Length: 467
Ligand SMILES: *Cc1c(COP(=O)(O)O)cnc(C)c1O
Image (cartoon, rainbow, N blue to C red; front, side, top):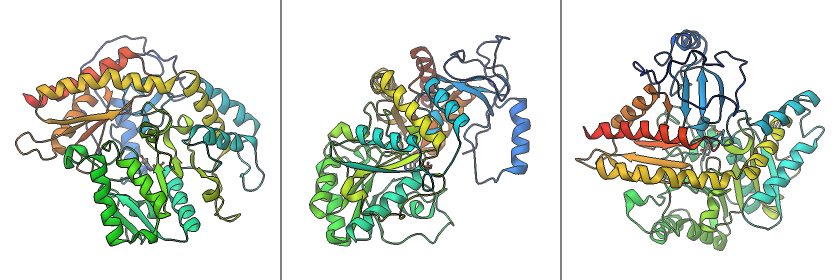
C-alpha cells in the first residue's frame, strides 16, 4: 500500500533535531520523542521519492514514503528531521531496536575481520555459535541441528525440502490466511492472491490448504477447529501422503490470528501420529515477540522443525531451520546451503541480538507491552463498533476493523486509520487477507512514554471511525 500523507500536525518545533542525514548515528541514544518539523513526507523525502520512481520497480511499494536517516529505540528519524514513533519494527525485525549496541559492536568487529568466505567453502565460528544458540533456545530438549539461510522464505522452502526427504512423502498442508513468503514455492504456500500471487504462477504442486482456527470468525474451540482441519486432510489428501503440516503459531500477514487454545497441540499430535513433520513458521512470532522466546511455547507445543528469520539478527538478513537431529540429518551432504546463508556479519548480529534479548529481559518486556496496550485497545472496542476484535500476544497486537452494519471486513476504514496515524508520525502497519487488520509490532526497546503516545494516536484514529 502506498500512502500519501496529508498535512502533519507539528508536535514540537525543536530546532535541535539531530540525525537528518544518512550516516547519522542511530541506536538507543537517539532522542526518544515524536517530533514533526514538516508535513509527511517532507520535501527531501519527496525528492528521493521522485528519484526512486525513476529507478525502483513499482512492484516494490512502501507503506509510508519517508526516507529514513537514523533509527533507534522507538523512533525513526527521516531525512527532513522528522522523528516518528515506530510501532512496526520493519515488520517484526528490529525487535531489539535499531542499531542495538551489542549488534553494532559485533558487526563492526566482524566486518573488520572478514566479510564472507562462504560457509560451504571455508567455515567460521559465528555460524556454529548461532546454531548452538538455536538448539538451546527453540522448544524441546531433544538433539537438534540447524541450517542457516538469508530470508524467511528461504528457511520455509528448506523446511519443506527437509520434511519431504525425511518422509519420502510430498503433500504439504497449509492454512487459509497463511503467509510464508514470495518465492515460487512460498507463493504456493501463501494464501492471499493479491498482491502476492496474482499473475505470478504457475505455482508448485502438492500444496493443500485447510481452514485454521480463527476464533473471531469461526467461533470454534481449538479442538473443534483442529478436527475440522484433520477431517479434510484425511479425506482429501490421505494421512499417509502428508510430508509436513506447516503453520504459523500466530498468523502474521494473514491478520494476527491467534488460534483458539488446543488447536496447535491437536495438530502437532495428529502430525506425530501420522508420521508427518510438524513445522512451525516462527519467522514473525519468534525471538521474544509474543512474550515467549517462541510462540509455540504458549501452548507447550514442540515442533519438529522451526523456521526463524525476522527478529533473529537485529535487522541483518539471516534465517534458519532448526529441528530434530534425525529429521535434519535426512538431507544428504551438499543438499542444503547457499552462497550467503549464515553470512558472518549476520551471524555476528544474531549473537548480539540474542544476548540483548536475554540480558535486557526482552521476553518479559514483550509481555509487559501486551499487558499495557491490550486493555486500552479493548476499551476502545467498547466505544467504537467498527472495532470487531482485539487480539494478540505480547508485542504482537492487532485490531480487526469491520463495517458495524454488516460485520464484514472494512479495508477502507482500516486504511483511513493507518493514514491518520501516519500523518501524525506514528508508523502502524495493516495486514489481513481482507486488509482490515491494524497491527502493532513495536520494537521491544521502546520506552513506555513513547509507546503510550503512539497508542494514543491510534486510539484517536479509531475513535474517529465512530464519529
Ligand atoms: C515475513 C514472513 C515470511 C517471509 O520472510 P522473508 O524474509 O520476507 O522471506 C515467512 N513466514 C512468515 C510467517 C513471515 O511473517
